[in-house]
Image 1 (cartoon, rainbow, N blue to C red):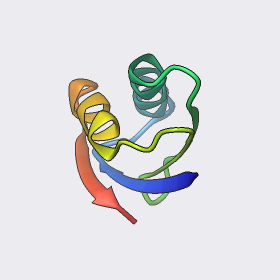
Image 2: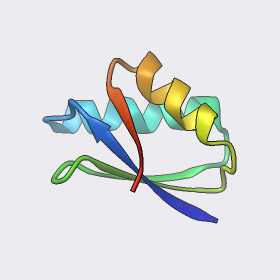
Image 3: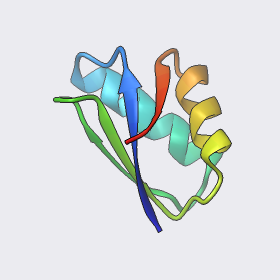
Length: 67
């Protein structure tokens, strides 16, 4: 199952990499694609939205929910 999340505060490649790494650490095996424009993070292989939210917030960004 693929879900798209809105993440606020990402402005560069380092930001997107931090978010991607945090999600992959919290949910091993997840497929993560970050789109800086629009602040979108597409995740496959994770059913628990709270895992994604916690990973994003732990990386220092604002989780703005499902798109």
